Length: 404
Image (cartoon, rainbow, N blue to C red; front, side, top):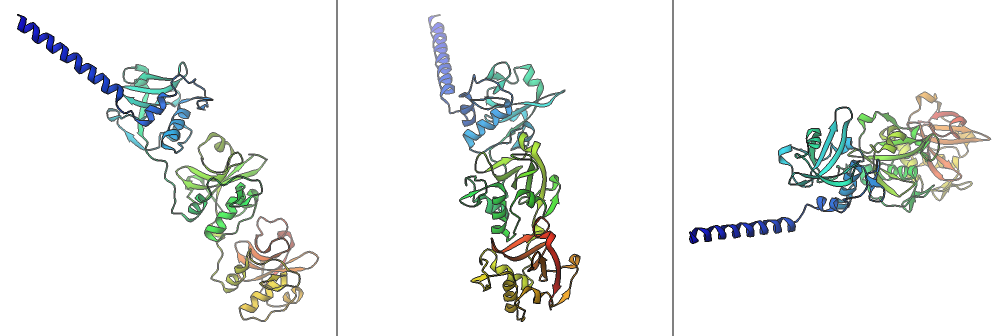
């Protein structure tokens, strides 16, 4: 009898030791970083629209905040966008760090949580703020489960696209109203600078002028490198824009931050969204020899009274010089230049035609396609102007000549 009792006592002791060892290993095992971070905020209040410990959290704000802290990339702000991230996970294959989504029949997608393992989830609830609850063991969450996603990487950015690749270089550049260099940008200054650098496309300076040019694109057909426009931000009308970079995100010079990346799905941006433009049609046709020669001097040569060389041009001196480089003797003054060549209707303009504008005197320029001219102005020297958006030059159009 003593032998049997001794064996039972030994077995019980071994069982207790095993339980202690198991509990110790469970308590000290390495947790998933997302779970470990999420646990820090247990007890933080629930707040509709909240996305930080200071504000409080709603469920999508909580998910976005935790991923930003741990994986250092920003998820979309809405549940609908978050549920399309990463890869879908079957209910019986859940792992720590997976994101679970829940829905109600009358509301659709309504909640999200982070899976902690051992049938536990951590999430902000209306009644208790951030808390840990059971998943399968709680009939409410179990019955309202919709799907789970495993999110390990940020949305893909189209880094190979020329405009996107160039724009990404300027992340973090400060915002400055009127800024148009890498020292500081405003939104349209960034767009203008990037397109000139990446593709040799010369856009107008302001957001509303940029909206007037290019090809309008339906948002469902948006491509990386397209430009997204917004209205009624800091002023009425078209007032902000950014470059679409893929993954539902756009890069822009934010008035409240710097050059940064945001999700188009954000509630603010959805409210202000106006449309999308593609500027590929504004590429300069440099295969035309006159256009090729004239555009060499853009931004390089200043205005100079009586100037006829690349040290400085006046308006007619620029046209005379370019023509001479292409082997054509051309008059020195605009009134004489107007007498050369064959008249061309405005609707039939071709790259290389000489166009004239009239105010107090004739002002010649070269047409370079798609409503654009290259010419000399007092303020900027040799520059590109888009007649579709420019309210100063367009009304002054006088006529055009084609010179063989």
